Length: 385
Ligand SMILES: [Zn+2]
Image (cartoon, rainbow, N blue to C red; front, top):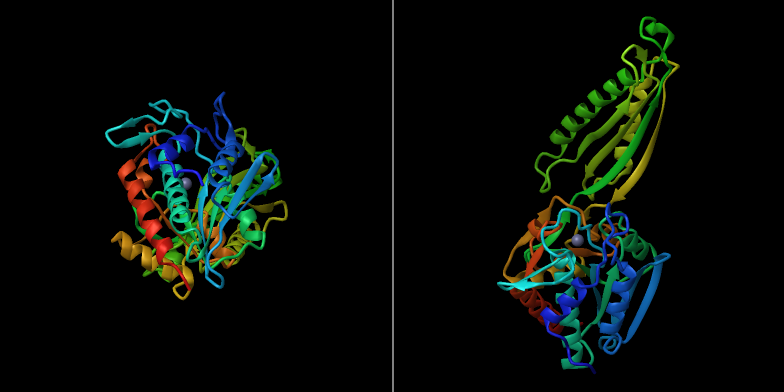
């Protein structure tokens, strides 16, 4: 078996492999992508893992699933980290040099989420080297496309994959993150009928209808605030983020296009929300046969609520105790929502801070990554039937 590389070596290799999400605004010339990360991870894991599988989500964009077998009849857990990063526009450091200064490793992805990924890899490789057979079965999962769509995690969650709990790598400052909202986005198009503004009765006013819809959204937000006032994450919310319509000041506009961003709770689900928006659009266009609308969901990231009677919660408890930090919740979304929605209990944990993620000089504190690896190593050692 190969010598386990140091955290710094591991993380530097991960950061030096550019894996900007292909949907980012600016792709670098030396862009290698998520597939190159999977090749690198396969090389790192091949000699130690009992099984390594690469599954293409879309051509050129794979997930990797490595398995370390545990004792017979033991539970089965997973460590999951995304391979992609955000783009590099506006960065003030060399993005993929993995320079180390004052105990920090700098580079795009160092914090989100290659630092947490390096901690996971290191803990698993070390556990395998020291113990041969692990006390429980552990998967290491590398997923593509977390930053712009989540197609990697979504595909895995829908593939029938199952285990007793998944720890999703994100920079949480070693706090166990058990709840976040989900995001659902819609496009609403209201079609009306164009006419000269001197003869408004000849037209159907799409912008005025959009105004009624937005008033309805404000009422919906008010009712959410009342209904969910004592909730941990705060109430769900709906925001019209963009609106485009009309072309001349003297013409009744025949089309308005809006993008709507909704922050929902895991236990709330999206169906109620869709119904509420349809009702508002119905009301806004009622009474004028010249008005019609279409509402399309464009993006969906489920919320996270780690079930307190799951094995994953036991894992979360152990990690919270080992790390000495409490539980936390977040305003951003993570891959854990996809697993939670598919019935696989999950929570989020890792070294580094979300404040350094996506920044112009992204970095992670190497000591914190080492600490995370040590804590995971202890967790793996303590996890048996
Ligand atoms: Zn991330």
